[in-house]
Image (cartoon, rainbow, N blue to C red; front, side, top):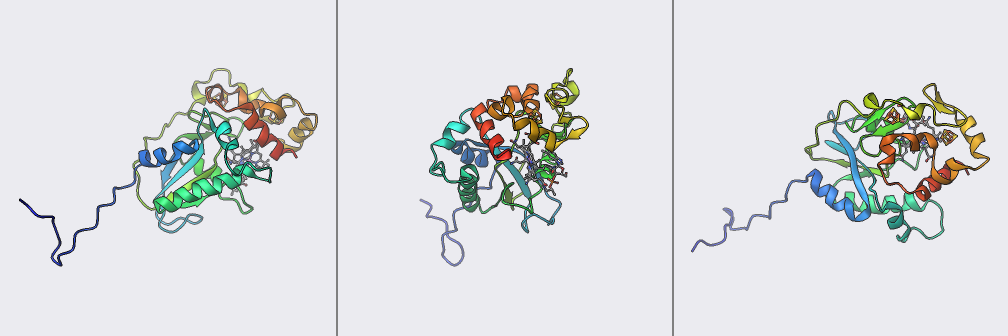
Length: 234
Ligand code: B12
Ligand code: SF4
Ligand code: SF4
């Protein structure tokens, strides 16, 4: 009967660490109602990314169930910024476990360039109204963090077309009641003046973002959008 294998010094070899896969990261995110929204391979060491980063993964809310999950977390304690504190704990912990680094869209300035990173992910485009549109979350896409991973993970083929080319009516261009967010750009003061009056944008989220057909297939709760609108328009 063959004995256990040892190396020349008589030591048992260390158990092989399985290579990290996108599926393994997704499995770790799922219990936290988070998912990988896209990713890209770096071109070697890049400014703004931790040294040795080979793959950057963008992480965001997974629906249905994100809002209910968040409200059951210890950070939902009445103190400011519960979602950001929760994101730091959960994504930071996962990064430690995976030997990765966690990066966050909040906490600036300076800001990590999530918008530019998203455009490199193969699942997000900058479309008529400048906001980002995502393959399955539409204009409701947002990020809770990113994982900078030293391994070169296998990523899905990028979707080169995006949803806008086949969107006949492009409702995002005309949905803003005060034309603050159109193909001409984003007039933040005009938007804020409209929000002073309350209304549907404050209770259910930006009407432009909601108008996109892709957004409508993504089950973000109006209460979740209202939370962000209150942060945006205090
Ligand atoms: C500052 C900021 C704002 C500012 C100014 C936006 C701007 N002109 O850049 C204000 C306060 C206006 C803003 C508003 C909103 N924002 Co904002 N914002 C940011 C933040 C924190 C930093 C952007 C930045 O300056 N980065 C530094 C530069 C160097 O990085 P960059 O990636 O290259 O920046 C690019 C973007 O700023 C982009 N850009 C330029 N103009 C605009 C205008 C808009 C509306 C957006 C979204 C982007 C954008 O061009 C830059 C160069 O490529 C990012 C998070 C982040 N860390 O990136 C979120 C971010 C861009 N915002 C986001 C969101 C969700 C919003 C809001 C929808 C919030 C809300 N209400 O729920 C609103 C949009 C308005 C609305 N009608 O609801 C999302 C993107 C959502 C999307 N689908 O595109 C981000 C990525 C945050 C996240 N956690 O996911 N935001
Ligand atoms: S409404 Fe249509 S054109 Fe506008 S972002 Fe969504 S898919 Fe693109
Ligand atoms: S939040 Fe409302 S007012 Fe502001 S850009 Fe969106 S639709 Fe227009």
